[in-house]
Length: 129
Ligand code: C2G
Image (cartoon, rainbow, N blue to C red; front, side):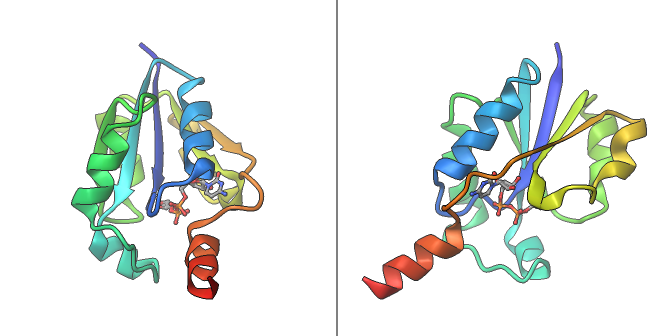
């Protein structure tokens, strides 16, 4: 059982999120998604439209996702990789290089972002329309 993990806010779910979740799952058999708590989002300077509980419910309904856990801090990744026996850590390439410190514990993969879509763009387009 090859175990994959990825992290994110996953607010206002869109095809960019679905693409990375589908592709992350292709690296193994079991995909864990650590979604940012509302408090951690504030640390990231983000205010999600959907609460943590709502984003968790939505992520758990996605066929590629096997388990959803909370992301509370930047530092928890090392512990998560260990405690969840993670084989592959996957993130979009806007994070390229930022998590290479995990490479002595698991495979670290950065995948190209889906161009032209983001939660920010959705918000902006909705505001304009
Ligand atoms: N993503 C993507 N294509 C997009 C938008 C997002 O591939 N058009 C990917 C991002 O690269 C990330 C994941 O989807 O891997 C989740 O994106 P966000 O919800 O914006 O998460 P982020 O704020 O990048 O949080 O500790 C890591 C952080 O929690 C990551």
